[in-house]
Amino acid sequence: MFDGIIDSLASTCTIICPDLPGFGASALSEETLTIDWMAALMNAILEKENFSSATLIGHSLGGYIAIHFAALYPEKTAALGFINSHVFDDGDERKQNREKSIDFIKKHTARLFIRELINNLFSEEYKKVHPEVVIALIKSAQETISDAAVIAALEAMRNREDKSETLERFTKPVLFIIGKKDTTIPLAQSLSQVSLPAQSDIHIRGEAAHMSVYEDKEYTQNCLLNFLNR
Image 1 (tube, helix red, strand yellow):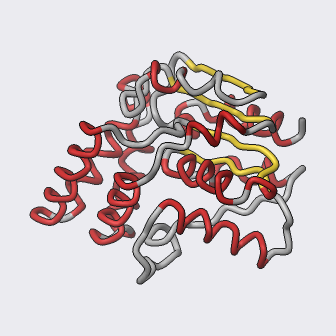
Image 2 (cartoon, one colour):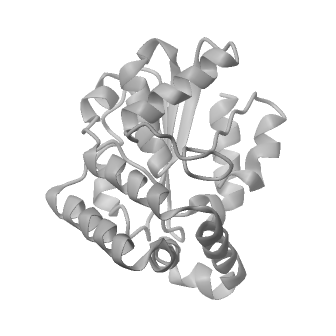
């Protein structure tokens, strides 16, 4: 996800970019996957690397983990960043959709689900100009992510708690990168969280959908650099 911008960020900051369980090079854990469990895993990594605090920045699911980390370890959270993400729980309709997705995967495997999911994360304009990027992402995900990993992630997102109160109590800087064309997270929902923290750094991008790291790479990279080096 962040391969294209890690090098520039690492020139001025220490970057830890772990693969979540079941994704990338990380095996799916035998533990029941929850957002709190993954937040605790981030804490274990920080302790292993001897860091007493960190800025947590996450895209989509990563943002859910970041805010749960802040709830569990407020003293270790130096700042937060949300890229195409939010702090709320799933509403009833969203939970039902995740259930339908899980049922679909169990019947048809995750390959078709992954194709449709990733395809819908990008704006139509980006897909027309950069179809090779979208196709490569779909192919890589289909080859490396198991049905069990996708189902576990869907269940974890479905079961997560609303953390708007955590964000409201948070006094340190918070970055929001929002895509106006995001159909996964409606603009109104994204905007409803930006006034909650004491310090908000808000970026609303007109041409981006849910994949700002790809669709708006240079701007996103500069946002992250400025935020991390503030």
